[in-house]
Image (cartoon, rainbow, N blue to C red; front, side):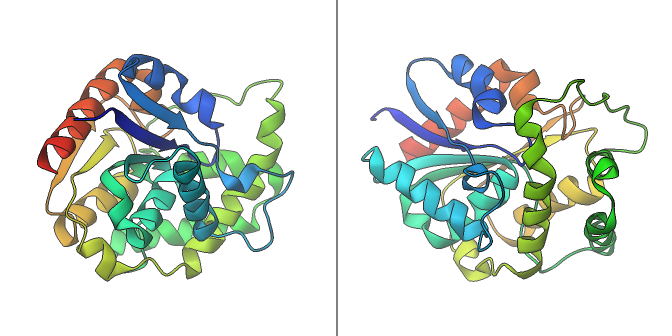
Length: 254
């Protein structure tokens, strides 16, 4: 078995180093893990032609630059949606897939509850800038979850995030995630789910992916975590142990 090689994609809020620094440290020196920032934030504003394919090609360039013919891919939130898009386009490049509450997983087989939550996400487009982030975060968690106040002063990179989140919401409306290609993916899939996250959103997605697609699917629930208090940041040692087991089992099965 060669070294474990993994690319980690962040969500639409934190930069990759902040999102995954503790996890990479917990993974240790035996894992070659790369926290890759989203292409979405390469400039001051989202590129006008940006879509999930932009992120897919960015992952491909990263892997090719490192000489990685195959690798493990993990993605959180928006990065999870990009990881699914990569899986559909380049399944042969992946040794496994790990999804940390992906923000979106295709526009088919939605339950009524999931369709309703996505109506609410689309309504965010009409909100003024000062209300957008709070409303976005509230949709991601159970109603009784107390969310932390925004940092004061905000980090400089935060100014890009509302436009980036809106770009994700727009591409989710029209992106053609290849259902047949996903259904043909046979490598192991790991899904981390927060017990305090909105069950009509992330819980529904986990159920749909396990039921409709991936035959080798492992769901790990973190009862006290939610989408904005995610296990890879708050419980990095446990997530590292689970991911290493997931990756080692995938390597052994090849």
